[in-house]
Amino acid sequence: MIGNWKEAEKNLLMNTELNQRAENELDLCRGLLSLGYIYFLKREFIKGKNFYENSLKLIKKHNCVRELAIHHEYSGELAFVQGDYQVALEHYTKAIEIGEKIAPNSGIISQTYRLLADLQMAKKEYDQAFSSCERALEVSISLGERVEEAACYRILGQIYSVRNNKEKAKENFYKSFRILEDIKAKYELAKTYLEAGKSNCFDHYECLKYLGRAEDNFKELESKYHLGLVNFALAQLFFENQEYEKANIFSKDAEKAFKELNEEKELNSVVEFRQKIGKLSGELEVADPEKRYTFSNIITRNKEMLEILEKAKQIKDTDMTVLIEGETGTGKDLLAKCIHFESKRKDKKFVVVNCPAIPQELLESELFGHRKGAFTSSSYDKKGLLEEADQGTLYLNEVADLPWLVQAKLLGVIENKELTRLGETKPRKVNFRIIAASNRYLEEEVRAKRFREDLYYRLKVISFILPPLRKRKEDIPLLIEHFNGLFSNNGSQIPIEISERFLSYDWSGNVRELENQVKRFLILGEEDKVGDNASINAHFLETASSLSSRLEEYEKEQIIKALAECNGVKRQAAKLLNIPEGTLREKIRKYGL
Image (cartoon, rainbow, N blue to C red; front, side):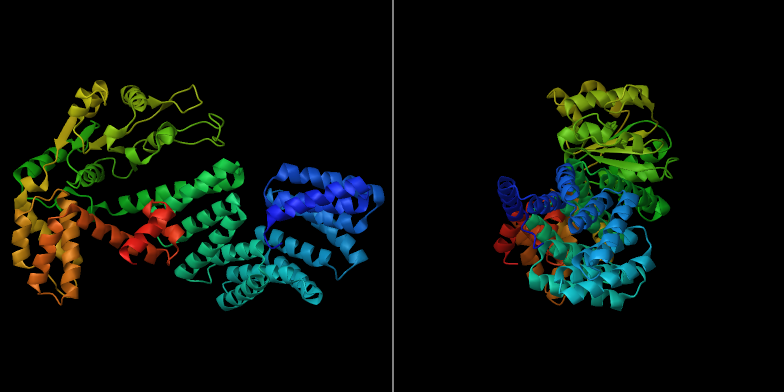
């Protein structure tokens, strides 16, 4: 009950062996029940059920009434977590009937009524759950069963949350915390942290804190399933806060965990949730594209850029594939979105495939989808990103990173307007427009035999090469003015002297680097009471001369931001930053954070 499952398993195996040698069948049936429960907790359900069935034979042989009630209690909990609510209810009812006859104020009664309350909560029978929980609480307090008492307070916290009685919900969660922390019942404490983190009675940062504690406890228990539940809860929490990118990160971790464990029910829930993220994110962009993704919102007076925009306007409503090339930070993503949201497909999906970000072993499945059973971990049918883009636009970001074999399959889709999921033989018709982007010039990749020539010409029906900022310096004053408006506080502006220095700088990171530099100077200017040009000039000269110092400054800012957003929970911050937790801790020490 305190969560040391490995030690419990070892001792119970020894116990059953000794009882078998001594032919003590009464104690043996109790040991088998407990072993079954250990495997239930570890979610090794087949093994757990086998021990329950072996114990039942001895229970019937010796007419062990109390052990029969425990068998029903444990079997009901097993049926409940596997989603068979009717079988669970039948077992709980039998356990309570036996308990009320032989010992109406025993642990059998308190535990089974508490489990029945959990079942009724899952069925949204909140009044019945409250009644069952009150009965369980009354008995557990009289017996001094502190684990059961705390578990009852957790359920009451959940019920009051549903009823939107936040004060009562908090009061009961706090009671549960205090008891379980005091007796160090790690498993039940982790479950209480998880439910508190999912509750609506705490604010966003309190929920983050409790989910972080749940994660720490379940990690010590080595329960991958429960860690998957924590990640799913985090994803839902960020989703409610309209932080869709973070929701996506944590839902991916949950999906991975449930796939590895073949947890079908939870996996289906996560898959549906991830589709919801994709749809809602798309709807938010489609809802008011004029504010962001219109040609008129691209800031330029450069002749070459103006010609590109004019050509993009002419082809926006065609189905011709578009290739956009240019250095990092030149605006490839922005141009791609403008073409989509100004086109006849603007009310359909704009599906982004970030080619280098998807692991190569998953890329084919992510793009083309798969049928259940197509490979070892494919436990459900999955629609690929190409299918998701049907009737809309497929944006292949950094297309040069596509593996050779995937390039060949993509070429077939473009030519035939149909695709075949992995594990299927019948092709599916698709109709989408492709926009591809690359910061490496595909013609050079073709010459180096890293990119298929036939696919290159299929993508390059319409081609744009975006000029770097150093070749469109007439745009720098316009961009500075725009970023001033976005980031200035209290009317602060980039001084003229700094603007002039900006004109003479080459901007290897292009518009993105300029944006970050303006943002940094406005913050620095505010700290220096805006107007200490000497300190700003010195800062610019120092950072402009050293790429590494610029990167370190940016990295430090991102770490501080991630830690703040995750309420200081390093494991969650590391996930947001997409780095190992150990690396994050090293960087925290390095920067003295």
